Image (cartoon, rainbow, N blue to C red; front, side, top):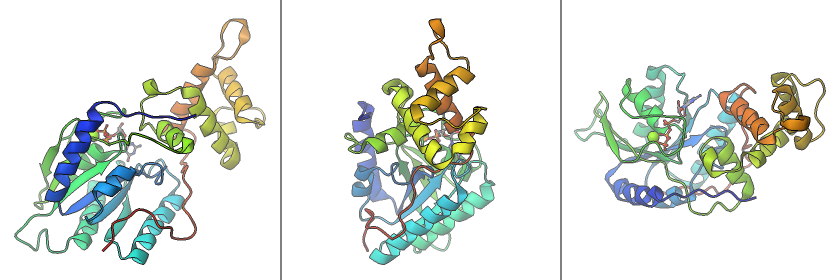
Length: 294
Ligand SMILES: Nc1nc2c(ncn2[C@@H]2O[C@H](COP(=O)(O)OP(=O)(O)OP(=O)(O)O)[C@@H](O)[C@H]2O)c(=O)[nH]1
Ligand SMILES: [Mg+2]
């Protein structure tokens, strides 16, 4: 099944971002650390091709720490092989502001050494990425107070918001940008599962089945424990029915309400109840990821 979500405001967002890129020294691309491959927008990669890039893996409190470290390594290795000006760091909103500030500002300084505190010109960084990955949350974390509106739904930020940090860095938070055609079904499902596409734009059952398939393969005990299932389900379908029965999602005649059961699976995944999970596994070899070239 294919999942697409490209509402009208995305066209405006794309134009705004394309116009903002040239005026910045570094692009800070926020990707969801649970899906570092699926949450990279190919259009943003293309638009930012000639700019130094700091890849920030967000929501690292929700992803598998070992795989997050492996992704950071992978991005930097792939970039080093191609002589690309790319750095990668992982952050979380649960982190201390000082620590996040240090990671991001050191990454930016390595990418644009002629800007910033030692220069008369302040560093200008544009925070971009797909919707709901935590761009505005990162802006607030770096600023140390709530300056940008955040909410747990995609499409919250609608315009550009500039913030000046106390070291003079000018940060711009912009709307999240999706791309018009998501080719791989697994990418659409991953984006929906991680909340980058609103539940109102999708059928939640295939998304829950996708999550259950991964859980059964890679984390079967966690699934059993989180939903207190007596025995390990044999298939995603069986798992969804078992979750529905456990959570009392029954229609008349005792039939499981699979839509309601799907909601429980999605909530458990997104809230971290199922533990720290990374859906995208990094390649073992550096791959020719789309990155800017020196
Ligand atoms: N657990 C966890 N949640 C986070 C983290 N960062 C952001 N969030 C949550 O993710 C949701 C989206 O955050 P936003 O900062 O609004 O995302 P955004 O990328 O600005 O979204 P748009 O403006 O819609 O493009 C909010 O509910 C945040 O609280 C994080 O590090 N950990
Ligand atoms: Mg935002």
